[in-house]
Length: 232
Image: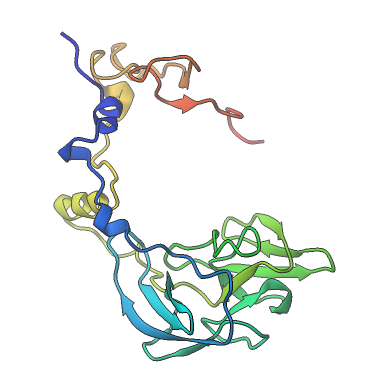
């Protein structure tokens, strides 16, 4: 009798693979109608995020953002205007070229979609009358609306990947907090009953493109890929 592969087991939502909802209770998004000034009332760690988080209080309520490098409790930040200071939330058209920014909006008012992981930041590259060009950490350039907002500075938590894990158990718990499966076994090293890529007597890589109408136990690897192969 066969058994369910890991992909199927995780989909059932059993206790072993269940997501820790408590870790994901903080929504990193600022409000669409920010005005005046805000205050950092709390800095804290979140097991689901790679950077420390900051709770910001303003006249209409509060919201959470990734903490900027050097941010401290009690710090006042501007939610509008043109003052360039770490932690301020400004429109891209008001931010000078070569300024580091993070938590950038994809569309005006969405609260920040790009650059949210620890130690990261993007750079404002050029400003035209129609758009602002941002260079991401991947060195790719993206054109955004002039009215999109971003937070000035770099996200705290740089160097997190340099610290050695040392013990396998610590790595396991770090991954589990973010609902990631670890350790991960290569599919082609499994037995044939454990995975569609399994067996074959050695590491013979099969086609990783799953058929579009494949059943859940067969739909693994590349699902409806736009392209395959190495980029030239």
